Amino acid sequence: MKLVELTTRKKIRLFRQSVVLNREEKKEKNLMRANLIWVLFRRELASYFATPIAYVFIIIFLFLSGIFTFYLGDFFAREQADLSPFFSFHPWLYLFLIPALSMRLWAEERKGGTIELLLTLPITITEAVLGKFFAAWAFTAIALFLTFPIWLSVNYLGNPDNAVIMISYLGSLLMAGGFLAIGSCISALTKNQVIAFVITVVVCLAFILSGFPLVLDFFSGWAPQIIVETISSFSFLTHFSAISKGVIDLRDLIYFFSLITFWLFTTALLIEMKKAD
Amino acid sequence: MVEIKNLHKQFGLLTAVDNISFQVKKGEVLGFLGPNGAGKSTTMKMITGFLTPTAGNVTVYGHDIVQKPLEVKQRIGYLPEGAPAYPDMTPASFLEFIAQIRGLRGEDKRSKIKETIKQVNLESVLYQSIDTLSKGFKRRVGLAQAILHDPEVLILDEPTDGLDPNQKHEVRSLIKQKAQEKVIILSTHILEEVHAVCTRAIIIAEGKILADGTPAELEAKSQFHNAVTITLHTPKDNVEKIRQSLLKLPGVQKLEALMENNSTLSYQIFPKAQHPIIGEISQHARKQQWKVEELHVEKGRLDEVFRSITTVG
Ligand SMILES: Nc1ncnc2c1ncn2[C@@H]1O[C@H](COP(=O)(O)OP(=O)(O)OP(=O)(O)O)[C@@H](O)[C@H]1O
Ligand SMILES: [Mg+2]
Image 1: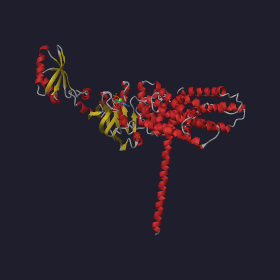
Image 2: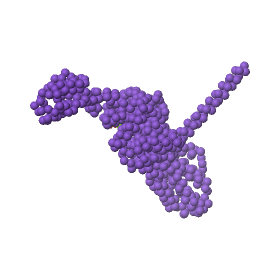
Image 3: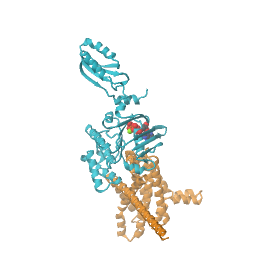
Image 4: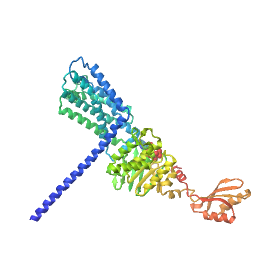
């Protein structure tokens, strides 16, 4: 009786050990895969700065942010210490700048034939898609970070609600991620960067306009309410304007994250399907 | 060991690779020959997992490329056609990147990178951007990337294309030197390269294997195989006599004059059924006391075999 008990106990212990071992093996494997994404990420990010792209992009981004905020946005005339004019232009700024960044993601790899090199290395397509996407996203984060003088000046001029500003920055970054994910997918379709740019602008414009009062009015005249709401719920504007008021709603976060996931998933799928074309 | 079974690739209506099967064992260097558009690169792209076969399968040391792509890709070093590399990087940073992706670390990584750089002579351009490298140096960067992790299988698509003669020689000796513990498949348009490095050659055209054998076996298919070239000095009025006496030898099928001027005669003599006839001819020449200047046997010409196999009709 006792003997049997011992052996079962021993068995259980052995089983536990093997589970732990398995878990650790898995953990190590996951770590290794994550490290691969990190390696890809660093190469991509470095390549932005190895060419003039990075500098041209950042300078234009900062320049336009300044113009939009201080001139078009009536920053001074409003006599309010906040950054809402600054953020309200971001969708329009991104509409042209992000496609210029995302167009090269895959089109360039196709054109230069390096896609063959990349995809015959021991990495999965998902890892490649993620590494590239995160690098582009990190790059926009850097550009966004460099707008901090605008934030400094508004703090100098008055007493803004800095929490709202931080949340708006977060929202803007999320929106940039959405634009980039769309751009990544369209860039995967072609080896021509100009075509990738134009199509991305059009698709992104649709995602912005679907929240525009003009467009919604057009639909609300005849379509059922639920359709109008669905259309508007797809809009960057609807979700971004909510966040940029300083309200973090889980639904807005889920919207951006699922949008990004969806487009990146489609990117991976398209690359898998038409690697060699 | 690389096993290819009934491999097939269809691009729309075009059949690029048509039911190809072969195996390559460790220690073999397989040369892929074939006219432009034959399907050499397409086959290599399927072996390395870039293209998915329309039908058939590829296994590398027992792992199927479609089912276990990562296991296979880890074992393969691949130089794609045209040796693509990121133009904005330098050879140094590019090799560092590849090494990291290949999971190399620390001292092992450093020594492998260093050794590879030495093997393909990249020292002089290490910190120049790949964009501005000459064609030959770009090819060498591609080659370096392929051999960096000392893979069990090397797939090289036209590895010596664009290299200068010295580099060609070096790359060939590098391949030969690595051949012992590896499976190597390379494609080439340079037939002398097949002699220089390959233990086996496959000729493909329009996606089908037309010949498969050692370079010597392929040469034996040549009509020049065992043909004899003889050059001799003789007074002019003897020419016709000599020609007739050669044609009368039992092993001789026909004879082609390479040179027939006043004092020097040169003939290429073709045997019946490609049997060796050199003995017969040299005996004959001695008996007739010809002043022979040159007498040698052709092994066969690979380019002639290539042409006759790959051109229809
Ligand atoms: N992505 C593709 N889409 C359509 N057709 C293709 C594609 N890739 C290759 N082909 C076709 O497949 C055939 C085989 O091409 P492949 O590149 O394998 O030839 P190859 O033997 O490597 O020729 P070369 O000696 O010129 O390098 C060609 O007719 C080519 O046009
Ligand atoms: Mg080719």
